[in-house]
Length: 244
Image (cartoon, rainbow, N blue to C red):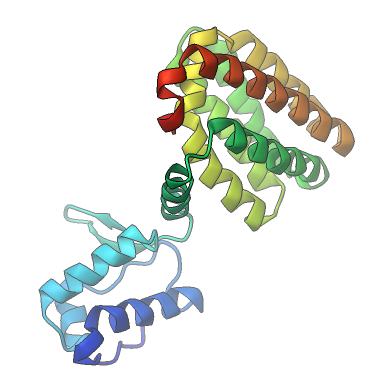
């Protein structure tokens, strides 16, 4: 790998961050690749190891690297972590006291479009993942933790199958904000059977490559969740403003 260049002292961490980001963006550093050690980077950049650690923290908080510990540890390039996006979105929405129902409304349009595209573009691997999520839900109808995890995976797999990175990034960012509230909603309403039935309907339409039916089924499913959310928020009015 090409060595990094020494940085200007007045904006050391910013220069380091920009160099590493540029390498990730242009593909010189690929997902899963390990960065040089702290010592190696300190020598290449001409800075202290504490400055290297500060820059690594910035990269980690930006979702560009993952830090692993132990004998096989280090800083590894990551390009599939949307948590910084959802965290920034969460702060903006909370500052503006945006209600959960608006998040659900936005999610409905995004996921309905994803379902339509998934019916047109899903590969066999995508369908297998969706099927596995449904089987996991069916086998664990009374285990809310497993149900919620399988529910999330089902929706994310559809977004991935749509083959549109913008839809996927937006959906995953919204999903992170919504999932805690929806988890409580599903538990509170004991809606596991209804959830599985709705998912089966969506999946059947995707398997049949019926894009309009998949979009309509996802719309019905999320409209039902939205109606249930409104009832749940009325019953839990005190916590509604900070639900996400």
